[in-house]
Image (spheres, rainbow, N blue to C red):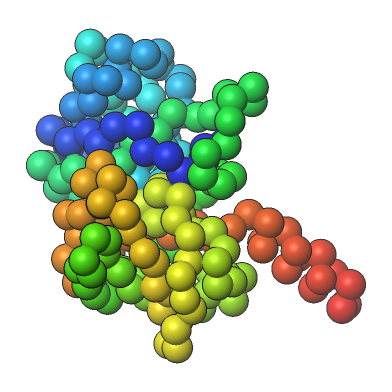
Length: 199
């Protein structure tokens, strides 16, 4: 479980193709010194297991279903990724509860610079859109964000402050770039409960 607060942006330095996995090496000197093999890390919001670690690098083995469901399948060397360790239960939840189970990919429609912040429009899958409310929470590339407005055609608009824009990879995005999207956990469970009542 995560809370959508990015601790470090790492850089992909190596990609190895194996028979059934793709191995990613990520330079992350801040987190690498604090993690052991077997630890869970949200990489752009997708929960991955650290398979090996050095003083500066984290290594992850990613299998087909994850490559297909997330943006990991399109990663290239040099790509900057958002990283977050799993939360500790005695700690605060500064964002919202994020499972690290990506619901779908979406894409950036536009990013407009206002005076002191950015308004970013993301196109998201209709199933996620159906569970989303204005002023509710959503995770984009693992970043906990508040939805400013739900627009037509499954587009959600999000206001992003300079700190978040600069300290995550949201500032790297260009229109059309794919992102990982995870809808609000509470909305998912409420939808499931209500659908069962309607049977």
